[in-house]
Image (tube, rainbow, N blue to C red; front, top):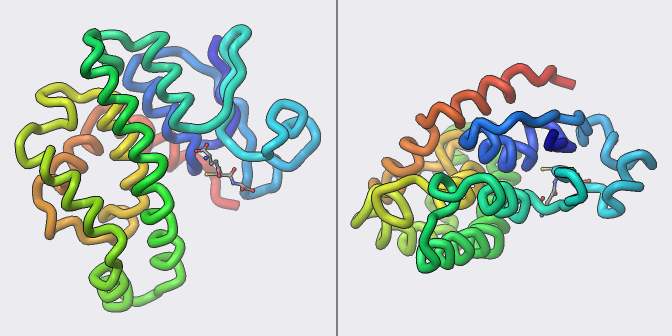
Length: 209
Ligand SMILES: N[C@@H](CCC(=O)N[C@@H](CS)C(=O)NCC(=O)O)C(=O)O
C-alpha cells in the first residue's frame, strides 16, 4: 500500500488531495513537523532534507509535494487527474511547474505576513499592496474566464496543483480574490469537490499542539 509521510496540516495535504480524488487507499505515516519529528534520525534516514511530505510506493521513494501528485496522477489517474492526450499532459506539467515556481514563493510569503497581522484592515491593506501576486492572478484569469478549469471543461491535476498552492493566497488565508472573479469561482469549485472536503475533515481531525 502507498505510504505517505507527513501530516494533513502541511504540504502533505497536496498528495492527500490527489489520493482522495482517485479513491486510492494509502497509509499516512504521521511525521508531525510541529513536534520536530521531521528532524529525527528515523525520518532523516528516509529523507535527508528533513521536510514533509515523502511517499513510498513499492520501490518508489520520493519527496516534493507537487512531484508526488504528478507521480500519483501519472501512475494511477489516467483519464482522471492525468489526461489521456499528450497536449493536455504537457499542460499539466506546465501548470504544475508554474505553481511551484511562480505563485508558491509569492503566496507563501503573503501567508507568513498575513499570519503576523491581527486586524482585518491590516490584512486588507497587505493584500491591496501586494504587487507580486497581481500579475499571477491576471494571468490565471485569462484562462479561467474562458473555461471552468485550466485545461477546459474537466478538472485535472493542473487545477489541483495550482489551487492547492493558491490556498496560501485565498479567502482561507484572508486573501481577497474578488478582483479576479473567474479565479475566485474556480477556486471555490475546487474547494467544493468531495475529495477536498474529505481532506478538510482530515485536517480538522489533526490535534492542535
Ligand atoms: N518543496 C517542498 C517543501 C516541503 C516543506 O517545506 N514542507 C514543510 C511543511 S509544509 C516542512 O517540512 N517544514 C519543516 C522545515 O522546513 O523544517 C515540497 O513541496 O514538498
